[in-house]
Length: 247
Image (cartoon, rainbow, N blue to C red; front, side, top):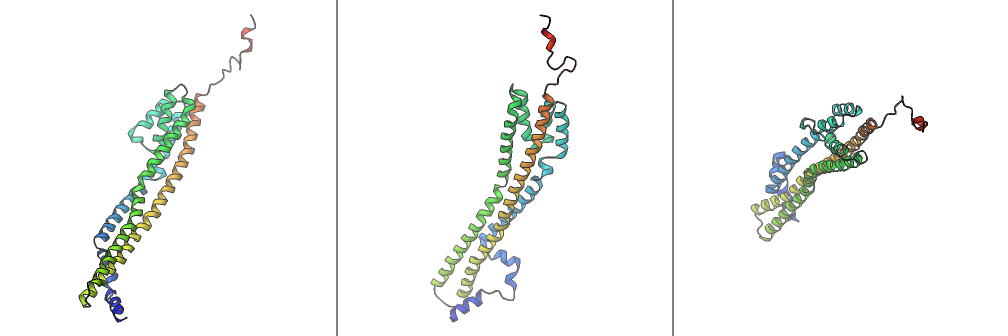
């Protein structure tokens, strides 16, 4: 029992200095520094996703208004050129452009446009999903790195116990190994939990934006179809029934 009490006293922080952030980072050793590096990468990814995965960025209102105006008057080729301009690159234009290309280039384009838009929408949505995969990977491997540090620390602790000796140096080394085992686990969880939460948040935001874009694209295709609908000639009547009366 006295030996256990000595170990606990040796592992306890002296004067509260062990609770500082710097010591918390350095106590993790090499694995701790790897986890800090992963946390920095995750922070950069979160900032990038927060900027890029937004409605105003993926389906800009000004582009919707411009495309509505073009398609309402049947300028489908101008609408396609608008979508292909690099300055107008967005989720909306990347999905609409294949549909307009199919509409203009195929005799059955009016029937294939929705299929082309759905295929392009699925591809662009998957592309957005893949952009968040790195955040999900960090959330998955951070606890594993923490567990690796825990196993390494426990192995070192048992090696210290097995080496024998009960001097202060031996106790300090054992306390350092136990600290490494516990600190790396905590560091891994501190990195992983926000990453997993934000990964799910961005995936849900992508789903919501894709659904919104789908409804906007349906409205645009309806404008395109209505602009191509034949207009009855009021002067000749609906079916010109008297055209063969004199035969």
